[in-house]
Image 1 (cartoon, helix red, strand yellow):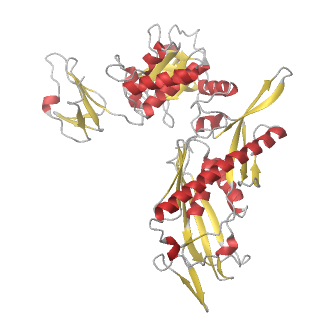
Image 2 (cartoon, rainbow over the protein chains, first blue to last red):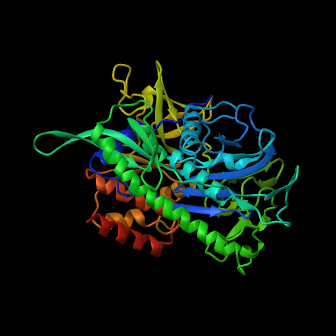
Image 3 (tube, each protein chain N blue to C red):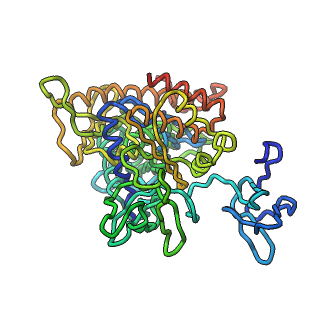
Length: 301
Length: 241
């Protein structure tokens, strides 16, 4: 397997020195995100997230299957991530790297285990038929901060997705085509977002030599290769923490983690507003003559 | 250099108008990158780009902005030392490609007893020497220029940008004035440009290095015109102060 190309010693020294003095290569502030863009596809459930030079595509599909026997009232919800050689020559097909395992694990914890999607609502006939919702995540270009961008893509794609409407008449289950009935959105409970903090050791501030951890938000690939440890905090805009992951690396002060989580809340609110706004723009664009309301089979309660 | 109006662009496999191929009574015709000679006398482009000729030196080549660096003899490159062996350093010219070799004795003033001490990850500015079992990199033997590059920062730029920066008259022919403008704005820095799409910048002041790097990469990515480059430099210098 090709090893990831390492930056030269000059780059390492320079970036660390610059970060210690509070500068970043692209002139951003230490806690500033890169230019974020979110586009939805023509189909429902396709989200294309661009964060600087990182680009991620998420696609949601739904099919009717048999539920797991131990969970007859739940639908199936899976997230599959794929880091192809297109993103970086260090990735190989069918041989997951550590990055890929960590990424899929984190998305699992953030989106699936936090019950963002109500899987019970995916049940059609208890024990016999349910919806299986699958999110495919493709990394098109890798320039760092895959976790935050992927989580945003997954959440945006799922919220944009519409599954075909179904009806039960007696014992027969009918899945309606989009032409017959307007597809319905998933039952979405809350939107979790990941914020990754990358730590770069500590510097002493003040006269008493107090140590202060330095951390960056939204790191590029180069910065990511040089960090000493990272911490990913997932939460929704109400400040409910879904998970905190700090996979190895140098230890970090407890105070820093608390500070990070309060900053994460602020960033999550920004991201949440951003996704809401993009979804609203998209629905406005789709709903040109205001006809969608008439097509819906739901009663306005 | 051709003016905007009579620039000739070619696609791979195109037929080249014989009137465009230079002929010279003394020098033989020399082919540059992007062209393939099919004996006896056919000439085909292998890449898409602008066809450039030099009638005085009897040269013809295709100017293109590809992403992958293919070494050619005589290129000035910036390499990263991968590891050292008894007599050679193995040098990475671009990521995920096989290494080039750099003889330890090719360095200026180097002898059997006085070898350069370079470690994995160090940068060297060198000239490619010949395509024998990979690429051999030999150090340029002139005073200033090639040699180990210490400190500073390495930036990745496009191959086209590297070529433009390396042109003898980069301002007139290459249309890059950022470095001149930055120098005129009173910044003190030194640069080295490698044909393999690398640029090394060093200065005493970190901020200066950052500004130079941002100016060049932005010019490259957004393909800025001369006027825009001047504007960019003014903005960056103002931000820095």
